[in-house]
Each structure stands twice: as structure tokens, then as C-alpha cells.
Image (cartoon, rainbow, N blue to C red; front, top):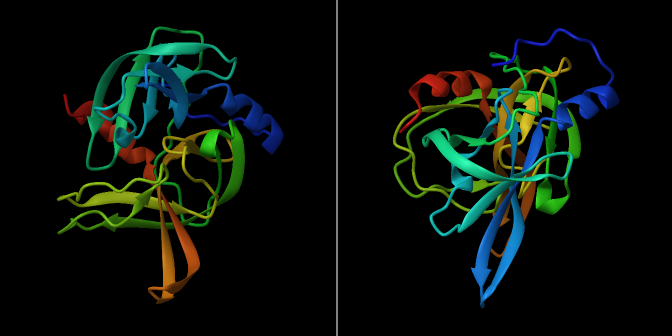
Length: 230
């Protein structure tokens, strides 16, 4: 894994450097005798030997083939899925390349800390957003079907164990799943995962007051590298 960065950079320089380690995850499906390739999610390198982190829900049984498109527009087939932490919606996979640098992981980002995010919402590749960490919390076990909407627009099965999360003010949406959240030095502090709107009013006329943007903390990523499901 990469060593923690201490290099001060401007936001534009930081975007340029970090984006080189961000990938777009593409899925190829067959429909009516034709193959279609669509952008599905985001990921980022965590090592210099081709290991990429993203969300577990990106990998569905119905997907035929998966690829990672790097910032230089090269499309790489996914060689293997190395493992996952299903409860925290986290997965690691590998491509056959050592041409891209892994991003360093930093634990315990404080509430109020400045963060930025690079992702591909609805195919808008390498979109940058900026904000702060607004909350750190433990999500209790769920008793029924998941109610939160992931950043790809889908609903997930209930999770039966407590899980740790951070919430951001930086915007992201469908296609941002797996995007790196990084501090002012370029250290990854989390991974974009899901959005959940706070709505009020009658069922036929509701108003959205806030959007909670939840992310997997880097501490969970580091733990999962040694305890991933096989």
C-alpha cells in the first residue's frame, strides 16, 4: 500500500494527481444479440500492482463482463475479484497492470475536515466535488429490507451487523459508487457508497430537505484487506 501523503498541493494540482489513479468501471451486457457497454461505477487503485477498490454492489450475477477504464482511456478487463466486505459494501479486484499508482489510505478523518471527491455520476467522467465530513456514525443492524438508495439507484438487502460510516456534504450520485474521498494532501479517507434523502410531507406531495451522502471509512477498508470474504 502507498505511504501516507504529506505533500501540500492546490485543489487543481490535487485533482490532476488523484484522477490518474481513478477508474471508471464498465459493464458489458448482451441485449437482443448485441453487446452494450455502459459506465456503471467508480473505483481507485490502492496499490501499484493493479489492485482496485470499489463497492460490493457493483458486482452483480447478471453482469457478463466487467472492465476498468483508466484515466488514459485504456480499457482493462477485470482479472479477478480478490474479496469483499459485504456488510460495508466494499470489494477489491485486480487488473493486469503496474502502470498506475495506488492512493494512500488515511484513517479517522475528523468531522468538519475538508474533503474532495472524484467520480463518474451518470457517465460524467472525472467529476470533482468538494465539501466537508458532516458526520461519523455506526449504523445499527437492519431488521428488514434496506431503505437507503445506493448511488447507483438500487436498494440493498438488510445488513445484520453494525457497520461504520462517514457522511459528506460533497455531492455524488448514480455512477459515483466506489469513488475516492480524499483529504487536502491526497490521502483517501473514504469511498462514496450511498445516498438517502430526508423527505417531509404527505406521500403524494413530499419535499426533500436534505441528502445524506454516506461513505465507507478508510479504516474499514484497511481492516477489510486482512479480513475480506473469500
